[in-house]
Amino acid sequence: MKDSHVVIWVFIFVASAIVTPMLIMQARYNYKPSALTMWPLYPVYIGNLLAGSFAPTTVPRSSWVGASRIFCLDASGQTLAGYGLLVVGPPLFAIFYKSVTVFTGLMSVFVLPPKCHPTKTKWLAMIIITAGLGIQGFDAFETFDKQHVVGALAVVAGCVFYAGSAVATENLMVNAPEKLEPLHAAWVVGVEGCFVCALWAVLTIQSAETARGFWLLMVLMCLSNALHQAAWFHLVGALGASTTAVLKAFQSVCLFIAASFVFCSVDQTECLTYEKIFSFIVVSAGMLLYSLPVNGRNGPSDSTPILKGHSAAARPSTSSLSSSSSTMSATTAATSMATAA
Image (cartoon, helix red, strand yellow):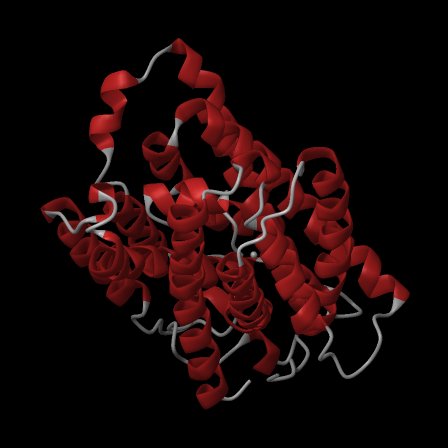
């Protein structure tokens, strides 16, 4: 993938990850849909479906099987994180969910070949980024009790599955004999996700929302998610799972600032605080450290600077990708059930 294409996909990835939670928050504040329906997940999987519909070819049978594994990991993460969220509440959820960056790095070490492992410098950057994300919200531990232990473990387990989904995606796109194309992955995840969401809707939705404004927001969420999911699969294949997880961390601190401007007057928990500003500074420093070029290594997709186009697809051992599932604030995480990809 060319440098310019990588930059474009990174911009789409970050921008859409800020826009989508803002739309979710707007829908929640204005229309208060039932959280039991897990309504924010519908645009995620419809977005995958829309992105996958632009694939130039149909999905081969072997690719479908591999992409189904990605969906199973993602759906398991959604279920565990959603349950944990209900038990521990948004503030504690946001803290535990931030472990996904480190888990992605660990999963890369255990699953991917050595050329795809993060370097020592990048491990240090990932730890700094995770710590920076966790700066705000620790006062929520004042209410932590035994009941919250199970919920916290569920959130952490969900993060493991999310990390597994990202690493499996990189493995299938970079290291598999028959490499999975990004838009093929999006199509399979979208089809299977929409099927599961339809079953869940039958079980949980008692009456349909009639407000036109709500459905307009849902349409915008579908379009935003389509861009986000297309960018996600392209970047995981081009930059690696750990690098893409780091980008998601950067999205989170950008969302702190955007949400403060738009929703502070409605919800004081979204207002910009000194903790959030400091979190932004620490995460940005971690991003800069992560982006430092690495000398003397030719292999890993995760050993390249974030905005460089020296993707795994450009190396001799991998295939060429075409250039065609957020850590969020506490309130946003509550409404979106940790979607993200």
